[in-house]
Image (tube, rainbow, N blue to C red; front, side, top):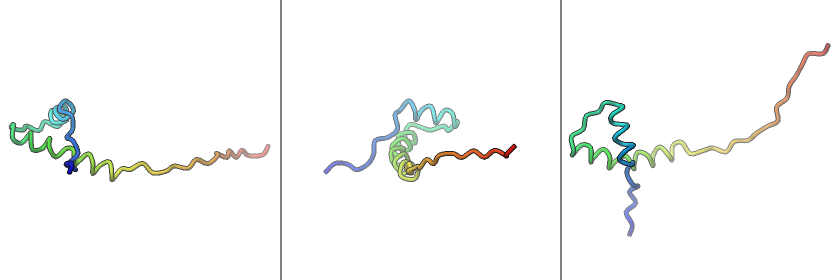
Length: 65
């Protein structure tokens, strides 16, 4: 049976996010947090699923002269 855990965030992206947020991590903490990023990304994707959008023609009203 395949492992259902999604892959973690790419290392370069993870390192950039941690540097930008100024979060210091030791090697063990870094591995742990990076391992969970796949789950975070999967949850965010489910929460922000694209919704169908309908388009209606625009009506422009102008005063009579």
